[in-house]
Structure formats: C-alpha cells, structure tokens
Amino acid sequence: TLKIKSIDSNGLVADWNRQHPNTAVRVGDHIMEVNGRRAAERGAAALSSEMKQEQILRIGLAREAAIAAGSPPGNDVETYEVNVSKVSGQKLGLIFEIGTLEVSSVKGTGLIADWNFANPNSSVRPSDQIIEVNGRHMATHGADLLQNTIHREEHLKITLARAPTYTVLIQRAAGQKLGLRFDPISLKVSSVDSAGPVGIWNSQYMDRVVQDGDRIIEVNNKHVMDHGPQQLGEEMRKETVLRITLSRRVLGPEQNRGYTVPPSTQSLHR
Image (cartoon, rainbow, N blue to C red; front, top):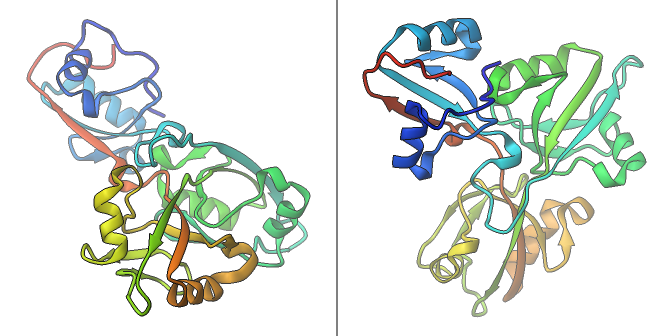
C-alpha cells in the first residue's frame, strides 16, 4: 500500500502543506490516485512509478478513519474489531450500504447479533462503518474488494469505525413541520429545509449542523436499536420538543483530497 510514512520538510509536499493548510498531507494518509490512475485498478507499483517519472503530479489521497475530517468538532473517532467465522453456515445478519460500507442495521439473529451479545463494549451499531476486512483497508483497496471479501471468505476480521454523534434540541409549534426529510427505514437524512426548525437550528449552531447523509439514532431518549425506526419517526411527528441524536459517517469518497504539484525533477516520495 502507498501509506505515507514521513514528509521531508524541504520537499515539494512540505511546501504544499505550508501553502494549503486545509488540505495538508499527513503521515498515515493513503495515496489513492496519481494523474487519474487509481491504486485499486493499477496497483501500488504503477502509481509509485508514475510519481518517479512524471514532473506534474495530481495526487488524490484518503485519510485514515481515525483522523478523518467530517465528524462534529469535539468527537474523537474510535475503531474496534469484530472477529467472526462463517464455517457453520450461519449468516452475518448485517445490512450495510453498498459503496460506503456504512452499517444500516443489525438483524436480531446472525453472527453479528451473537457477537454483540458476547461483546457489548465492541458491539456493531447502525451508522458504524466497515473500514478494513482481513487486512484490506477501504482507503487503499476500495469498498468493492472489501464487500467481496465479506461475502467470499469464511473467517473475517472486520475493523469498524464508530460513528461520531451529536445532539440537537428542537422546539416547534404544534402542527409545525420539522423541515427534515429522512428515509423511514434507515432514518438517514436526505434534505433540510433552511426555513424549518432544523434549518433554523443549523443557522444558529454551526458546530452541530444537521447534514444530508447523517442518520437519526435517538429521539427523546428512545434509541433506534431498542425502539426501531418507526417509533422514532412517530416521535418526531407528534412531539413539539425534540432531543434528537444523529450520527455521521466517518470515511467516504467525499473525503478524498487531491492536489497538483508544479513541474520539478524532485521526487515526491522522498
């Protein structure tokens, strides 16, 4: 894999970091793409060769989930491991989104349900995200390969990132709509009306803005794993005072970053 181990303070990448602090390259980042060539398709050796030979480089990187941007400030992202075996023929009982590997739900029966019962401190929850399977990381191997590994291999060592959460407090008039659209099954937010109560909250509390893609996991102390999405949806429809806790995916395609290095004979990986 093309994981960055160090950055030379006198090199081009260090110069880039000083000029672009918001997209600074960090130790631990993964090189995903070089000049349109993706590591998942061409392999690490081809990308390494491209960086040695070409003078103008456009490099796309992905950040490890443990330090990924995109979580609400003040929340530390944690990861945990799940070890299960499908030798007995039992199914995982895990539903996750294709492409992002974000957990949608955990079935009441299955290997993951058994794992959760035996390991409550590292139980799999909705909105957690699969980031590594049997040593293959999503940032370097892509979601498709991880999905295939989960389906094909019997023994699975799965690393997940715990989704960071935040809470919003909404008070509205009787009969007033929230101004929040979400899927009734996954409780994933699809849009926020800027003129509605949630939109007004967003304009006042920039550190806890409700965004498209966030997932509702608790309403007025009722957690989705205990009460189900239907009851949470009903709670949001009828109550005028709402304490809503949402989670946010840790790692996704939108967090890949790219930069262009000007012509130079200096090697970027030194």
